[in-house]
Length: 281
Image 1 (cartoon, rainbow, N blue to C red):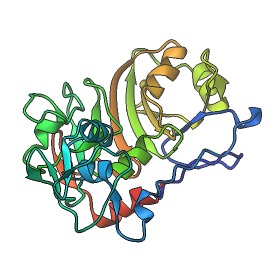
Image 2 (image 1 turned 45 degrees about the vertical axis):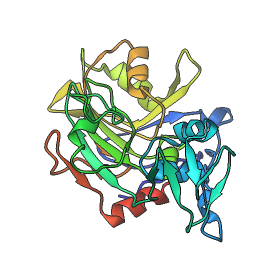
Image 3 (image 1 turned 135 degrees about the horizontal axis):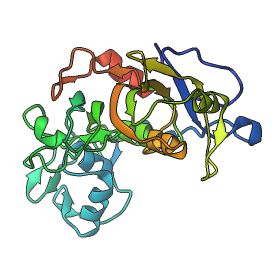
């Protein structure tokens, strides 16, 4: 099922088993979500910003690449470059600590994160991190998209495509995520109705669910689809209503599921899946 960014309005989505939308109350001034467009790649001569080149080479994040440039750690064609926004041509030789960097290929992985593993990838030698699980799959530093806390499980996307990472982690984007939750007490009908009718939390954030489903014949086990890209959204809404989430398992992220992936297993995304992610927003 294709995933679309929420653009306001009253048109409903009929997702199964449940659909939850978090964001502004469209009845109170909510409107179209801002579209985040990266235009750096649209340079006709094939040039690319130096910080982006460094990040795509797997050295570090784009922000950290700015620091490397500032301190003069990067050379282009033998010349130290400290200029922010410097553009590298396809024929340029870029070096860091004497090693020639390659713009390299872009990699996209899905992993079924196990419990008690952090989402960190910057230190693949550290035990109990997602980076350690993927260390043999790719020599590049991959960025986790849609982090899960240490005690949560389920699907995560990882890539060294910084443009895609920026898009999918921007809180103003909305796309489908599916979760299965276990809460500490049965979800009352009153609270279920409150969620589906929509309410404003103490923080001022408007939340509304189009549907809530119960799993395993129990009101303690909930199936949720959300179109929210803000951290800890589920913990906040259930906490507002007096519930504690005991277990959280993410079944699907932007249409990518954990189907056929056992805990700790990973796979490369297909070209079709990558294109699907790039079309979001």
